[in-house]
Length: 105
Image (cartoon, rainbow, N blue to C red; front, side, top):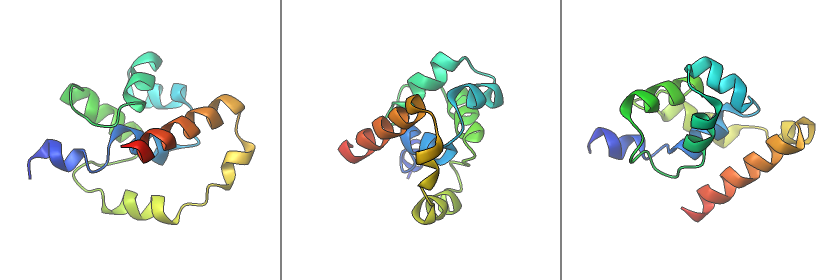
């Protein structure tokens, strides 16, 4: 298994869901990338065509180490999604969109 195959086990949409309820702006600040770039990466279902430097910045800003994804996977499996009721409608729409992309992948 190469590094891209390993990273694609935890695609950008799932990394972004792991960071929820953080806003795109908060992730952009942590990553040192523009919000538009964070948004574009968030909607991808694979890491293909995302430059390696951005992959690392984005995933780390979302709290995910792509070389050690066991913990984030366990976290997502046990996560309480009750916070969705308390977030802004735009954030709720983004999470819904990410979940839709993940289910469709």
